[in-house]
Image: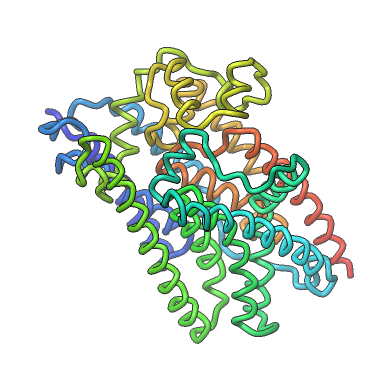
Length: 436
């Protein structure tokens, strides 16, 4: 008797979410993660059964898929989310604030975020007033970008501050959230200062015409809200919800504008219909793709060359990562692997393409062990652990629903090195403050 793999997959994720919610009795971070995966897997089933994806009439597609990639993907998700299940309490040693270290660090980061915001706002301004948000997306994929500075030195500063803003956002946000929970300073001033940390990513998404970028910013904001919600009184919590609703409305309006412009461009140059950009299809394509386009279809696994290009200095790969657009990178790896690299493929699917079935499982276990040792050795999340935990959440857990690992590329690896260094510095500061 045949059964629909996509439906079974969705049911397993939904049951895991319901069990997690039953045990927690509240929407904590772990429950929220499984809710997100449940929605994505359900959309994966619906976008195929409702004929929104693949060839018309492929409603029985799920019955012809192998169960193996879905089992491995589920257990990978179960493994990687387990530390969030163990999380009980976020603790801050408030001596850190009285020591002045975080204040000084936050001042430096404020300048970093403001500089990045100015640069990305300038790019977004030019895009909105020239080519439009829809065309900006295709420009980025073709390797065209708005040049802000002609100076090599200034461009180097932009690069360094971008790495720092990606690495240190959690420390900065936690500093001001801790001020709010401790009733230090004005609520709205603290919120305004905290919001500066998200502006570079928001403006960068607009400059690139990326609705996905805004989507991930939203998940980042939810991370901080969910870990601090138990420490917010009812009055402040209500204000957070109202402000969050306003931000969500602005984001949704912006995303709809981007989608509208992209659809207009698609229909101008292709025969793609409006249905192809349906939200259900956008959220749900990763899991059908996993079984159709990827598992068993890869003719040659890169074995680290795509994820870690800095260690494989071939001329072709050095060129596509430094000077070419996203589409040319995809085309290059399409030729190597024999599969469509641009499509969403889930976290395990991306590592499968890179290392194969056995290699991906070994690589994920090694990666999990390293991250576990660095940031999940205690159920109490201290300030020094937050930068890596937040990075793990955004780059692995949340991106794992959709695009893949979020860990490839030299710039990401630089951010990880900064994060690890920052973690050890903060641990030393914490220990020193405990002895005060």
